Image (cartoon, rainbow, N blue to C red; front, side, top):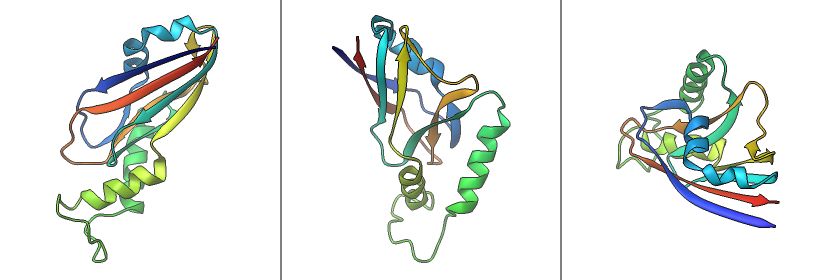
Length: 140
């Protein structure tokens, strides 16, 4: 059993959903050392999240952002955590709904994603910064 771990940086993105599959693959070349295994991605932030979904049609990314803004609106009178702006508490809620990690099978040294699947960085803040991901892969 081999275990490999690396922290990578994803450049600052605008608010919304962004495909980062190629960023992950290009910044983690040791993935090819494993023929079979599991890759876990973990985002080290509370106002951004990570998920896997359709990556063929860019309108999916726009629809995700529209839906989450409708589902978790800003400026609600019951929010108390607002010192960093009106997007602060909604960003934390969206991050918890989507999650901070995903697992992907590794087959023949590559991420074994479905034909239409990709990895999304979900940026929930209006003014973001670089985001850090920890990639841990284990297998043979």
